[in-house]
Image (cartoon, rainbow, N blue to C red):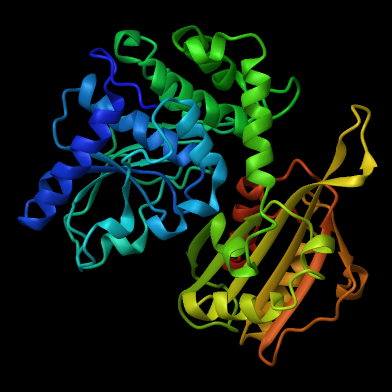
Length: 411
């Protein structure tokens, strides 16, 4: 059931702002609004951070025309069961009325000009196309700082390392706890839990994450029940990992980020697109069960015009248990390059020299399959011995290799 107390009307805020924004777009006034959005992967951190920062802008800074948006289309919301669970446990309901990008009528330029970015710090090309007045008015992030929008973004908060962007957004409420509703506190906390492995000591949680937890937990009755944090994290983790019902195409799009790169090599003229898909299952269980893996991966790349696709797996090995009786954490990386054999060779060779990733090459036959990619596609797969290196670590390394930037890949 959705909470609708007089003091805490977050659900009502989401519904009303979405309705008003779509009406404004319809009447040609979408440019008057500020759109708050997370990155295109649409994970829980992006979702919670966008909702929370839009609420902050409205309730603390008095901005009337502001709306949170997820870059996940409505048709793909089912790919992230952990997001639905977080909304439910936060008393917002699994059908919370959050604006999805495909609910906005497709047009060029995008109907709004003011953007607040959370969980990323570069505005994507789709929002800039034929939109010369597009302005980034705020940035809150925990990824590599690309050094943009220093003259326009207020606030501009980028703290690396931080486990969760939601922790940085939560910090904005330290002096405004009167507007921090129980629903919002819970939602932010779910994002922090899933991004920091349950605030595990010695893990991904940093000072900002711990500080945010101390702020949020006392303001959410749902979080104060004995064992609540552990139970919520366990449920989130299980739902995030339960992907056996998804096709290869859906697994690739479920947690996907895209980058426009300018290769330093003469092998590629002009800008190319690279995608990185994070997938919570290992190749040993994935490839034999999905005979269409290769065809669907090729289609995924072709549909998006990708030259490079990186598939980053993260999972627990049920055959190798750690001291706590849980499967050991494993990571793997596969890269597929389309129609550029020279770039493929350069990228593959450079990746194997990156000390930070500690990649160990394996063969497709080690997973019980043969390389089934067709003509024009080159692929290589590795086990990643440094399991602490997430996509946040990998992305700038791969971008640096392709663009020829020194000292990025720790060669």
